[in-house]
Amino acid sequence: MLPSQPFNEEKWREQIRRHELARSAVALGKLAWKIRLTEDYATETPATLAKLISKIADILAEKIPSEVPADELEQINTFLGVITSHLRYVERAKVAQTPWSIVQPAEKLLKLAAGPKCNFIIRPTWSYNYSITGEFWGSYRQYLSKCVWFPLDKLRKQVDLEDEQTIYCISFPRLERLNCLLHTNWGHEVGHILSKRWIDTEFDNVWEKAEPNIKKNIETNVHKNPPPFEPLFKDMAINQMVAQQTRATLEVAQQGFVELLCDRIGVHIFGPSALLSVMEFAARFAMDVSPLQADNYPPWRYRIRKMVEFCQPDLDEQMGIGYPNHVLKPFFDRLKGAKSLATATSDLSILTANIVTQEAYNVIEKYWHAASDFVVALLPPKLSKPYRLHECYKLITHLVERIENSIPPNEITLKPQNEPASIQDILCAAWTYKIMKSSSESSWGNNDDYNLLFRLVLKACESSYVHSGWGSKINKEA
Picture 1 (cartoon, rainbow, N blue to C red):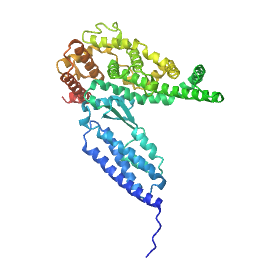
Picture 2 (picture 1 turned 60 degrees about the vertical axis):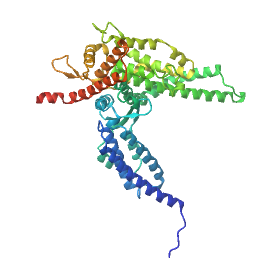
Picture 3 (picture 1 turned 120 degrees about the vertical axis):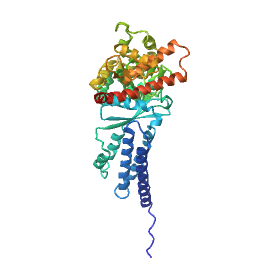
Picture 4 (picture 1 turned 180 degrees about the horizontal axis):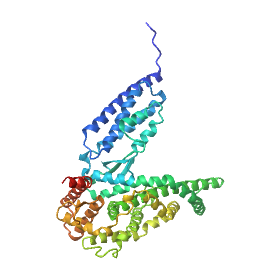
């Protein structure tokens, strides 16, 4: 009988780790594949992410037992946990959980804005917020490329994804699933992809130019308002405070640019509808909170002011004969209300009350036009022209009349040959109708009223999408 070997903790842990991680990877691969095949999605993107996770898990299951170095097993455990959690984005994107009628045309528009290789999962979240998460394929590839034992080329072939392709998840409040009017906020979320390109390529240059003067102003302010310190450590304390406040200024300026540029993209794509969505969303919160008390986010009033500036052409009654007409007048008045909201300067008082926010927003104001021009220039030619209400008010009036008659506003019948309305036109008409009815009829606005409007708009988005993709073929066959 062979003598028993002494217990070796490291070998024991490695053996258990390999066995359990391989077992978990097998289970994850099967689960992801099942979710991919058995759930119903409005687009292919959720199924693509599920397939990607499944194939990664299958390869890991093959490699973990013998090929993964022992010192990498802990990282693999973390990685498996991360990609497993990402399946929740897929599960929540099934048709029953989303306003599926608008998902296809929305993803088409978002892909047009961000680039044809961008793909989007649209799913609800329980928090009352719109957000964007990702990029999944890029982050997976970045990690796996460092694992010399992982056959990345094999994975690429199995999932048919190029390195340039991306997958993002855009979340919307679950409570607003059918409230497609608020979903113009998706324009802001896709703006994060474009604003990141400006941050990555231009922000350091902006900061390099601005930092010396900012540091000087902060140092002057610290000397005027010195903290309590021991005389022996005076210079050290001042230098530390200046460094901390300079760093905080950078962070406030960067986050401010990101959010404001995203708003700029949203209002460029959707026009005043995006502004009204932000106003309605912001009404739930305080309008004038310092970025230092709001995770570096700009005050809502400041954001609305920037959007109002962009929408100024739609606030000019001389922009066209008959504009605004009786249908558009309530919408126009609401825009004037936005302008009044932005005229108040209580947010500016908040920003100038602190040297950090004051200096950060001085930088934003100085470089705002260059930054916004840069980001808008990233949009494709089809979206290079901003959406203007005064340029399409006759079309919007026509679509509103369809809604009034309980007809989905999916097509334009002003011309001899009917044309599909764009998702921007449909949502603008819905906002116009909502404001017109709520301002003229005190009884309008119960759940039945809103549900009817939402159903008409969602049906219109679906029908318009089908019309735009198949209408010409159907006409030829007819």
